[in-house]
Amino acid sequence: MLLLAVILAGFAAGCAAASINPHAPVISSLVAEHTTLYPLGNTTIACSASSPDGAALKYRWVCNDGTIIQDPAGNGSTVKYEAPRTYGDFHIMATVDDGLGNSANKTVTVTVIVRDPSQCCR
Image 1: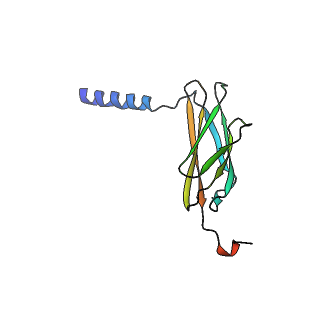
Image 2: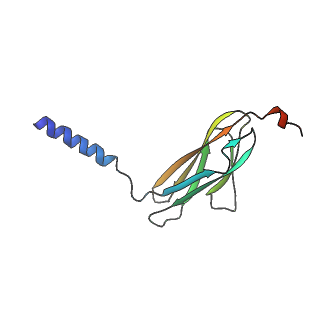
Image 3: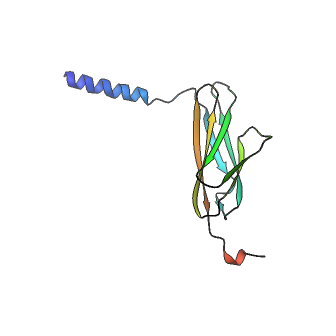
């Protein structure tokens, strides 16, 4: 009986530790204008987020390959992504931070495909 109580207490503690932070920013969408690109092609990616506490949000962007180009005049919620020269799936992650120690992130995938030779050199 004591062993069962210890196991249940440990399970309850683990469940409490896995709870969702009610103060973390919420990313409602992360959308790439084009999810399929040719090498060195580009697309606009927009992140829509809000803070339950009404805090100002800061955006950070990372990708596993390619280039992220931020608009210096914008608030960081929209960037341009330039695909690499290689083919495959590439992941772009937006992290939203409220400056109060809370953050959220979301990832979008862009696929770089081989350009049809008939489309070349026109």
